[in-house]
Image (cartoon, rainbow over all chains, first blue to last red; front, side, top):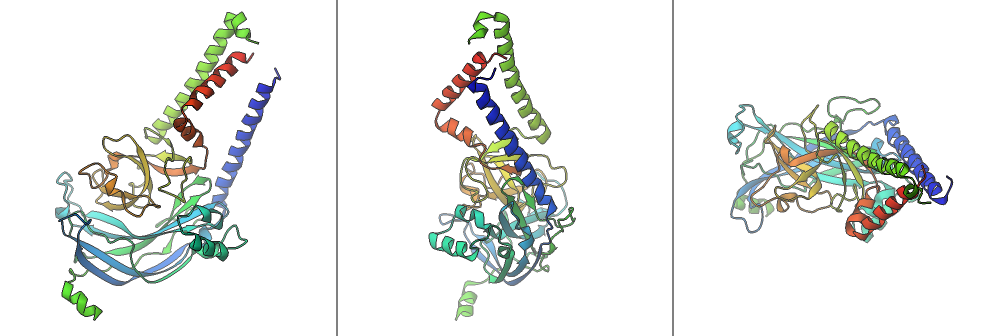
Length: 235
Length: 172
């Protein structure tokens, strides 16, 4: 009955039970913290240029380059169970159904489009070593939060005239002069254990308030920029 | 020791017990599959393309029903590329249109480029049917056992042997 095998089994079984109960408590603790995120975003410079999807492509497409300024306070998202916060800015617009390439969709409603133009990974001090950054950057990042396990200050973003990371187009290849485009700020909280959560746009959820503001004014994309025009602007 | 060999009734009970454990595990897996509407409701991360969020060996729980909202930009989805049977865990970064035929583009947070290169020849975007679930919960490290087992196949034999021995040696 009490041979060493059953003892090992019992110890291992008890260990897993305890580990899972502790993990469940940690995951549940997320819901006890307040979340009061807010963000203000506005476009500073919007251009549309012609380009190719990749070097060997002969297809010419229109690409929108939207520079923006962003002030965000996401500090309340950083708790002991936060591994990283993924912040991303999307451009959202609607296009008429005629421009949709797929003939299958017979619906006459407008197509909604949404594309990420910029994103950023904000690690917690205890997950810095996992980030894909060089040793010098890592050292600087570590120094900025020396001695702290949680650093809410990293949730404060202030970007001025930020270049987008991704230049976006539509599957049709046409995006110039699109109207009613908006930029929106989102986040995704990655926990150490538990549920992944995203920004709420419309509803509060318990102690978690929806994103305050977080959307730019609607704007219209300009016509395709001519090459010589660009040269003049530089000169 | 080896009591089962002396008593056929006990041996049968042990074999049944082992079968019960296996079938319970199978039923739980399939039950989760039905609830989440995903052929694979729990997946193990196999690559570092979503680091630092997910490491190799982390366990992800998937949900494949669009009860409240459609699969949208920012969600981390698991998809299968046409004719390839490797599930990939990446984030949706673009979505054009709505409904079943919405065009979705994915990208790994840790990758510089989007997934166009990973898709099948002639496939520029994913559709909803390519996706087998969105990640909604996360447990670190637990799935590393399966990576060990698939990278070192002899471990499988060892584990099966130990399990078999335990079942036979156990008296109750």
